[in-house]
Image (cartoon, rainbow, N blue to C red; front, side, top):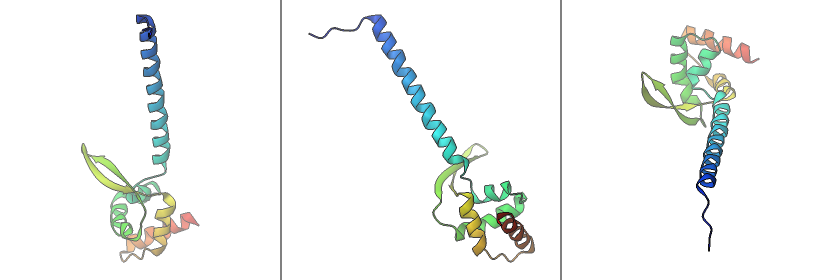
Length: 118
């Protein structure tokens, strides 16, 4: 015959399970944050490298066609969740090598970014 735990033992076990779940979730969230730290959208990488918003948005539209192998993700804009693709900085810089812009501002930004990479 199985002996049931006392109320005190049951409460202690319940608290231990809750603490274990919290620790597991915290570990998972830390790993997820570290993974996403190096992943940004194309425009996000360009902005982080010092390109202004309008130029980064325009360049990103064309650069996305040159890049492959990003990780699906999402962004929140105005409270709305939108799908996006995230890339590493190395992948974006590799795409800049193949990128041949027509607009003068995009050409200047490309030269500036490739100079940073060198």
